[in-house]
Amino acid sequence: MTEMSGTSQSDGQKFHILIVDDNAQNMELLEVYLEEMPDVRTSSACDGLQALDVISADKPDLILLDIMMPKMSGFELCKQIKTNPNTRDIIIIMVTALNETADIERATECGTDDYLTKPIDRKALIELVRSQIGARRSLH
Image (cartoon, rainbow, N blue to C red; front, top):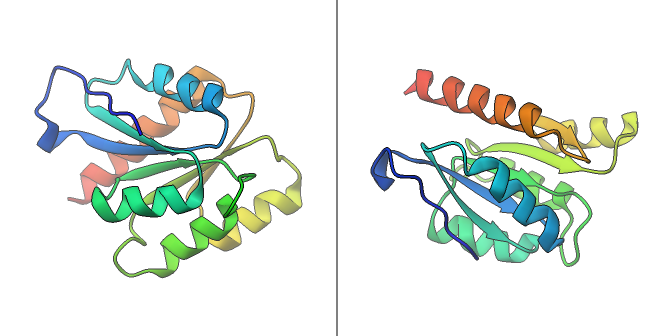
């Protein structure tokens, strides 16, 4: 698990993003893309079971979630998070190579808040994360 932190705000004010992907290169790429956001800190998990451990120890505000992973798919993890009263308010953005309509429908049924297909466009990712952060902060 890795931690990143910017310098403009204290950790108490940072928006915590958990990156869940079994591919280390994908995870590193997402971390690099998010580094330009000083109000964000990231952590990571390489599968759904590790993600559950991270969530219970340090609940994230948003999860960037791969679908095809060992041990527990992103679909299963998303459903588990969204059906738990303690975690259902976590924003989930599925980040996956799956882009068929059926996959998007299944992700929606599991409770995902949004969907990005790989290869990830840096600008689209940053805009989506900023939009979700803005929406979340306006509710509080």
